[in-house]
Amino acid sequence: MTDEPELDLDLTGELVRPYVITNGRDLPSDNSFSVITLVTATEGARDTRVLGPEARHVLELCSGGFLSVVEVAGHTKLPLGVVRILLADLAESGLLTTRAPISHSQRTDEKLLNNVLIGLKARFGA
Amino acid sequence: MYSSASRLDSERDDVYVDSAVRTLAKVLVVGHFGVGKTTCIGSISEIEPLRTEELITEASTGLDDLSGTPHKKTTTVAMDFGRLTLSDELVLYMFGTPGQERFKELWEDLSRGALGALVLVDPQRLSESFPVLDLVERFDLPYAIGVNYFDGTRSYPLDEIREALNLKEETPIVPCDVRDQISSARALITLVTYLLSRLD
Image (cartoon, rainbow over all chains, first blue to last red; front, side, top):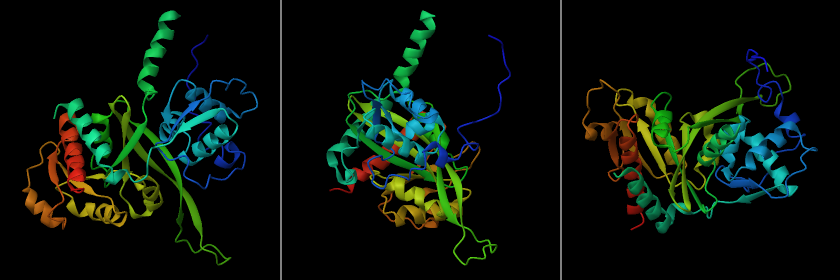
């Protein structure tokens, strides 16, 4: 174990084109992966040898519990669009399950807004 | 090694969303560059604010394309976000969204399903908030204004700010110091209270 100087190289950043990371797949056209959709690895997601390094990284991160799509992007430092494709791929292979936000018309959901308000007041005592 | 393993576990507890959570909501914290979006999110988020980048295409104004098709280039736009667990089963995400017109692709994505927006304004640079107000109105996002008083800023009467920004009478406007947790939380509470009042 030697102390090596940290290289200022971000191999998942600009040195690898998104197209390569996603195996040439395009962005999913539907909205099954909204920024706040929760994802987690399935129990059986063990054999990850066939996955690319980024997909494996994403899956490893997701094996610890639930995270939103945008948090996966934040932790892995991969572009959001790339993460969406990787997650869609993993879900298709049965390695990942998702929990979508309940509804798209939340803005008029009085119960939800009330719960948000109660939660904020309880948390901050304001 | 056991101690480091358990430390990892406790860190993980903070990283992940509780598995009982069923309801996910989001609000946008918007404003021009440097107005304090990230500071605001950081002061109330339960996780260290994260940054993510999205690739966007924008039309280039360059005339170097001989094929006659519009020249497009891809750029990245960064956004910061935070998270708040509000009950056993409810989590609220806060997205700091840059206010430039050229990021409207990102706005389209983020505003979908959002409860509303907290628009942060700097009382000394009010006109810089015009583009972002245009965006929230175009995307039909209900919003409240948080007037961020930086250290040493003299106070401006809120009704003058309301007039300068051409705000509707019903639009709430609240002074805040985004570095302060309770102050930022109050601004968010003002927004949600307003969102509820609109349903009556």
